[in-house]
Image (cartoon, one colour):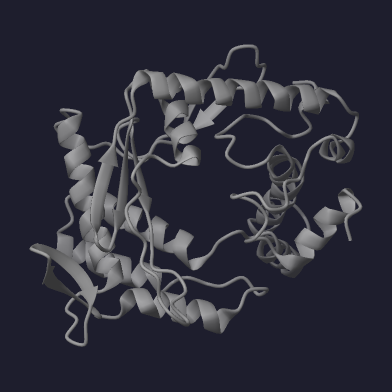
Length: 314
């Protein structure tokens, strides 16, 4: 492949700005991959410096880790036939494996992890409905409730699709109209079901519980529309919180509308990559969208400062 792509080898859900996507795929990922290669002994280099590089560019937080943990526990129960009790035990152990990057507030993130592990919720009848609320006589943790509702939601989605059994996550690649690079999607289950978890926020001060969405979020719609393009299977998304779950299955019209956004975004990205000789000049052609929804907030402040220097924003 010619070098016009500048280490940008495939497209994916265009929920993040062009600028941040190019930074991560064309610059940061290459550095991190080299660091892992050094640690594995495949490439010569300083292993301490490699570890520092991985830590520097690590984009993870407690909610992301909790979401991954719940999906892994769902896999244990639904794909490997592990009992629900053992799946929950796995989830508790896995959640506590979280390691904060050196540049994050470790004490703050420790509180966030612990909050998800405390038995502080009990079922109460409110206006004729049973709801999970915080209680001095709590019987369940937030982790347990989100896991239970994720499993219930996935089984509901399985029934909706008429599947005898769920299959696990797979990497899918396919072509896009008027694009040279392939498109990559990674559906969580059976190539058509996506799981999203939401967690209590602001746990250090006044905890705020999340409510289930009334519709599919835009970034999630483009994500599952991409799956639809790659598989021709109608997708379903499952949202799980401590209070319950909800499933959504978009119409073909909604999927086609989101696919148009994907096509336009990926075609634009290829034009940008071809418009300049080096990735720094490509980046300067992009609007960084510093306040974008999926943007820069979870980035290492040092890395963010250096990123702003590319656009000469200091």
